[in-house]
Length: 108
Image (cartoon, rainbow, N blue to C red):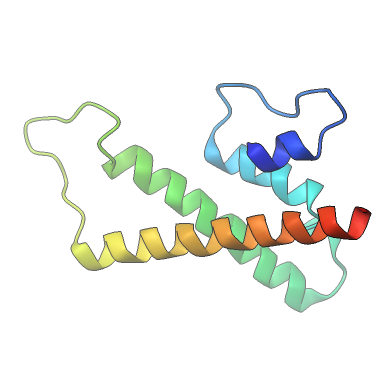
C-alpha cells in the first residue's frame, strides 16, 4: 500500500478490505509490471508468473496462516514450504520496492 500511496494523485487507489492479489494488480499496473502492459511474450510470461506467486501467497496465508480460526485438527505446513513462501514473498517485495524507487528516481 505504501507504493500505491506514493503513486497516487490524492485519490486512494485501494480500499481497506482489498485482498493481496488486488493490491498487487493495482501496484503492478502503476509500476508498469502488469503482463497486459507488455508485448514481448517472455515478459508477459514472467510477469504473469509473478501474479501467480502473489495469488499463491495470499491463498496459503488465508488457508494455512494463523490469522484465521483453526479447527480441532489444523493443517500444518512443512518447513520447506514455509521457506518457499517466505522467500518468494521477500523476492516479490524487494522487486516492487526497487522498481518503485527506480520509477521515482527517473521522474525527478
